[in-house]
Length: 195
Image (cartoon, rainbow, N blue to C red; front, side):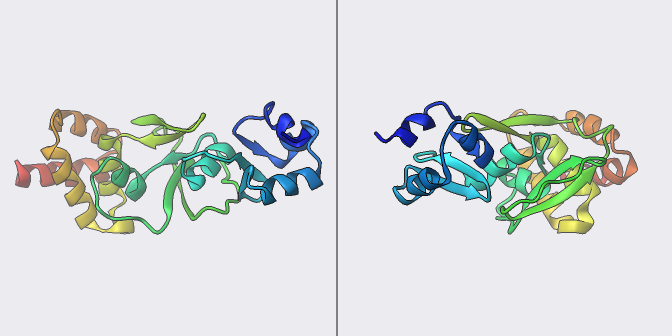
């Protein structure tokens, strides 16, 4: 084990260039560790120790934007409410927060601070975590922002959610109530047709 590899033990599995330098790893050692595939570069200035099986895009989001929350098509796909594989990772931040520069293919959304935490859960990504909206919140967002991905995506997500055991339309309507008529009205109409 080289000196630089020994210094890696003091770093988290996902670390920044600055953290590596503070731990005593020189630019030359950092380059050597990359060439020897002991570490890999996730994005500019962001590295992971080799062997992590996590999605590098989610690792970058979790590290660079702690408030980030997976939403819309990305959240629907994670909850198996959609077969679509989005070209971009849909990520929400509170409206007043600026988003960081990312190498990952992220489509940023700004949600009101008053409703931002509603339905927000945590998704573990290695030793980090990133926010993700739960199924009910994701359906509400799909309906209220249907101009982004279409009405069909929202309807399909609702149909799949209704087929899941434990889904309660009353729970969905309580969540939709927080977002007003833009979510509540179309969800109520869709439920009347489906139930």
